[in-house]
Length: 260
Length: 254
Image (cartoon, rainbow over all chains, first blue to last red; front, side, top):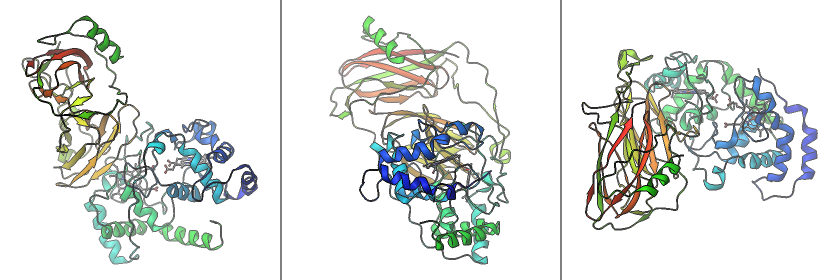
């Protein structure tokens, strides 16, 4: 199931504006962030940030437990904390196919405030710095030749071990996988036409070049060239017309200012 | 828990030659407090701890690991290495380490090695210094992923794919001491343990249960052992300048 609360709540964003104290550009206010959190996030992510809010019980994919500082969608290498901009990217896009909605209707400052607040649940943010983000070279462009090369890359790198030969999430190792929190997890079905986080080609690229921390999905950055990585993105995009459609819809969204 | 036992034992007696005391065995994993940082100094005339660990009681019969995927490459079954015991009871894959040492020899310069081979990790267990590099490699044609986690919290440390034979990658271990459990998600039976300490006084027992810890500054320490199934145990050990102590440690089969 999937719902978007995005359009429902712009009123509160205005309210929250008044409550916060001014902060340096780029970083949010923990104090105001707490208010945003209690209003919008607590029911799923829990008062202690343990991912066990009231609503969580009925969800197959559980809300993130923030206490370990483990975040799946990052531009930083495997093992690193995320950048604030990574968390903001997640808030803007939501996590497709899960209960995590998009938070576009919050103003940017409220998003930054709540990000500052959720970081306080893990002591790691006080003692560690995120590593430098990976470099994603520009997309050389979708083409049949690139898809053909990407098909070979998918084979060579054995993605099929988990995602299956056709990308449907049915490889030999697809069963009995667990995440860090002990919950069952399945390899993503790559034929769905979208990934969980984001509609851009770069969103697919970063998944296998940074890995999804806390899950079995590893990083391939140490073994794969960026040319191979782009061919692999195009191969994945060839598995469903949905990717192109979603990419265009997202671009149109941005044009009309829905993203702020 | 373990700390309490160690402290109680050290009140009783001091072992001049051999450390033979058999004190509590706990099944829980070792947890380390963040200690004051370790200080490197020249160790002249240090002592040696040259001991052995034996298993008492029969190791429970171990069913072979049933291989559930990639059987064409990994085979149908793999012997369970949890208890690796020789004919005289020597127990392999035990980490032996000092618990309360704050000064001494320098950290090992070489990275650790962790090899994915025949759908298992090798070595099964090893000690490490905090922040030490670990070189991870694969001899196998099937994909593996090397996914170390904090054994206590399950938090991912990193998760790197080894997509093909011959590939290797070197990564740093965490900056805090901890017990690390390494898994390969693709092959759920694959496990390894790395005990990360903030000093270099540790060893792993060889196939005959033997271990050696060298260049120990003279003094009284707590010598601790850890085995993945038999659990933990500790006892005081006295190391005299230029001398070798030969503790014989036993762990009861579980």
